[in-house]
Length: 159
Image (cartoon, rainbow, N blue to C red; front, side, top):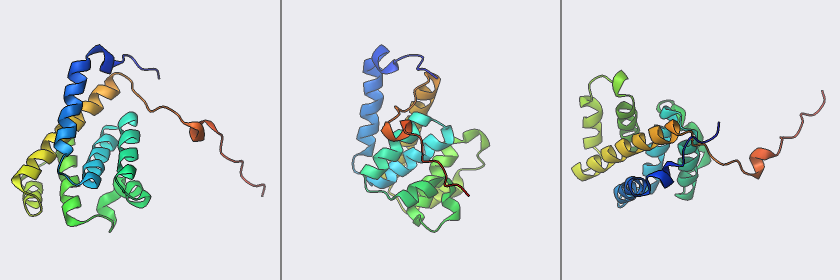
């Protein structure tokens, strides 16, 4: 699929505004957790560009390959702490609003680990991330292939 529009050039001020808001929300927040939440929203939204971007950013923030790989099944692994689980649950519930039941329980879980300011930062960040995934998907933005993706994998050894 080719990109439908270079939206960052068509509305540069608006795009920069969204990006500036996301950067501001990230300030003072645990960078690994911020990227895990962003990556999980991107996965749920099935945004190839955002999955690639936030996977890369999570690695830069020091996240491990094991946890990045297990993020899609975070509930069924022992790799995530209670605060991370609360943040991931909140991200999933807000991203899947149409499927969500009451938000009282996940909100209470957040309150056990985060200040009101952190909860607001997290919630605003999830909202911005959802906007960004919809924009990228709507305009057909995909990640750029690198050399590894362009090189065919080795053929399996003969049996």
